[in-house]
Image 1 (tube, helix red, strand yellow):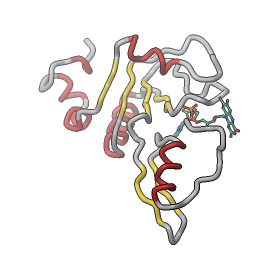
Image 2 (image 1 turned 90 degrees about the horizontal axis):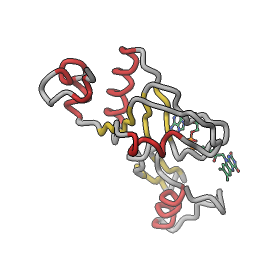
Image 3 (image 1 turned 180 degrees about the vertical axis):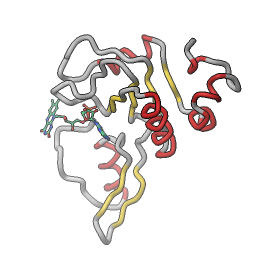
Amino acid sequence: MDLWRAPPGQALVFRCPLLYILNVQVKTAPDEIQDYLRDTSNMPDGHAERLIMPSSIEEVQAVLREAYAAKIPVTISGARTGTVGGAIPFGGWLLSLDKLNTVKSLDRTAMKIIVEPGATLDEVKKAAEAEGLLYPPDPTEWS
Ligand SMILES: Cc1cc2nc3c(=O)[nH]c(=O)nc-3n(C[C@H](O)[C@H](O)[C@H](O)COP(=O)(O)OP(=O)(O)OC[C@H]3O[C@@H](n4cnc5c(N)ncnc54)[C@H](O)[C@@H]3O)c2cc1C
């Protein structure tokens, strides 16, 4: 029995109470996961039990606690532009950073910007421009 598919309030609550309470988005359908089984390396045969899409630090913590307790490998998935296959899972869970894309703060005095790991360069650039600043690196890269 796949406990992750159990109806709310039943086995799912028993196995992973924090994930259930936080309502972390979990995808298991092959067509929803397939794009996350590849990166720029084009390494074949990637596979994962589920794709988990946390949208907060608390959700990341809950996912990793659950995986650690169950000894399940977790592969972090960013923009999947890596060229050596590091984002391709070979079993276990995929943890996508897609929803962790917020620009948290921009300190003009310190010239420091804090962003979540899924924020794209385009979003960082726009946040800088909104403050009249220029984010100069990566002139041809916006992902
Ligand atoms: C056309 C092209 C040009 C490129 N040019 C350059 C270049 O000029 N300079 C350069 O440095 N690189 C370059 N790269 C490489 C690529 O952009 C980098 O590898 C990129 O920074 C990876 O980021 P990503 O979000 O796509 O990570 P992914 O490919 O999704 O992941 C890469 C690895 O990091 C892990 N990971 C990702 N995010 C996190 C996180 N937040 N916490 C922990 N682990 C994480 C993944 O599990 C994986 O092992 C280029 C790639 C392409 C396709």
